[in-house]
Length: 339
Ligand code: P6P
Image: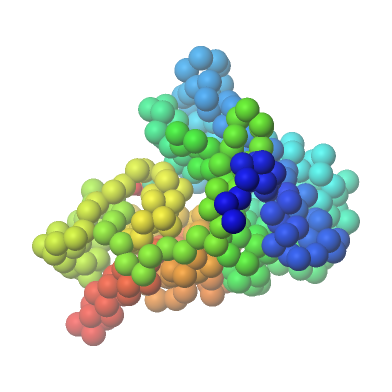
């Protein structure tokens, strides 16, 4: 029967996680509490972004460069610290690993009770902040495996993306959306600012088998290997394809999740492993995409099977509808045959 508006408004994120797990076990309650903290981080970041241009500390650069050698934006720092702060009070998360920090950040008072690790990109696509185009936060939750005695989180380099307990993103767009999975489907919530709650909007999202969108930065065309150039020539020539590229992967991913298609960040001559980070960009999105019936590959290996060699490891990424990822792979395999 038609769900009442009241029922809908009461399907908050924390309730949804508990329902997903059909249990109120301590693990279920932990995950629900962790997701609630992530939602709080999202609300704090969304609030600050909504005031960009009206207050200090949102637009522009700090003047520093981060561990990736990229110039740091004020929002990168603010968002990075928001996640640390909301988890300090939570007691659940012992370690946080982020694109903005060379080494993981430990919350000693939470270790070892809080056996969870948060891996995140606090603001993905932060160059969009200054021009008021969407950006996102990407997160991944893992269980700490073994003792991390030397503080270098080696256990994160011993398993692939299938050991993620939860993954998702917050998309700061015309509305703020939180999309997550704990391995039981992909579910989308919209922030209702009047309630200050993320309310369930779409359950068990499935990406179409095929979609019209291909999303890639064609400015790198001459830096790609020939098979990727051939793929691009194919979609240029054939009807039914359209290019969309926002400069912030979360928005491009979100479009493909709903409408189908494929996002590509191939290796380039400058960055043979591509630009995107495995642990807190590609692996969380790959987790979601597989849950939504799509695929994510490096071109030679499923993203979720890749075991990183270092915390900030990069991988090439082809992610989206099964048929569209398969089309990219057919050009890559053709290229291998020609070698
Ligand atoms: P390029 C943003 O810096 C990011 O990590 C992704 O969000 C985005 O898709 C990509 O890099 C954009 O990179 O090289 O196309 O500007």
